[in-house]
Length: 197
Image 1: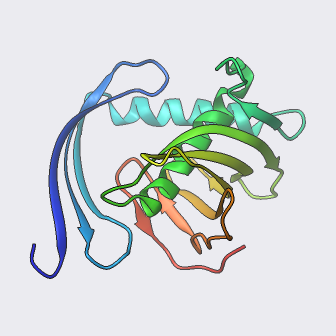
Image 2: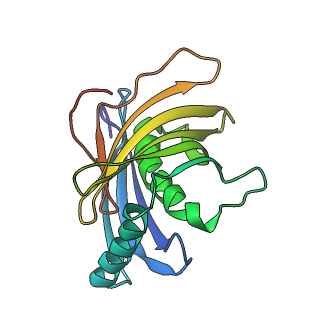
């Protein structure tokens, strides 16, 4: 698109992260603006799972995290052999969801990112109903093969978008400021303004 950038039209299928079952098909447009800014994404998906079933799964997941006898702390998920302890699967799943908003913000036409590892995770006990975690995540940058360390604070309540604040500092480089605040969901990313933490 002259003066604007490159626009891509995509059609893809999705799968349930935990079970690998077919979760539906999506149509998306992605515009990479000429000026350096995050991609503009529009996405529509048809879901094979019933919305009520998804909400029930979210609530079970939420209750599992919310009713720990003590705050969850963890390091190196997955471990050096690629294993994730079953008790830490919710911590990993939230990290995957939260880091996707960082990857969306940082991606360009020539750079992409994958979550390589959660170096550390710490749950904060809150007086309200939200669950909150601090993470240090390692993102694998493609095609440079660089590993980027990001600090991420994530808050979530079922039925509401995940809220993510982050700060990334590439290894061997100066610090790079992250977002003020991000909100993301399976329905598509959306930004909200807020102060850095």
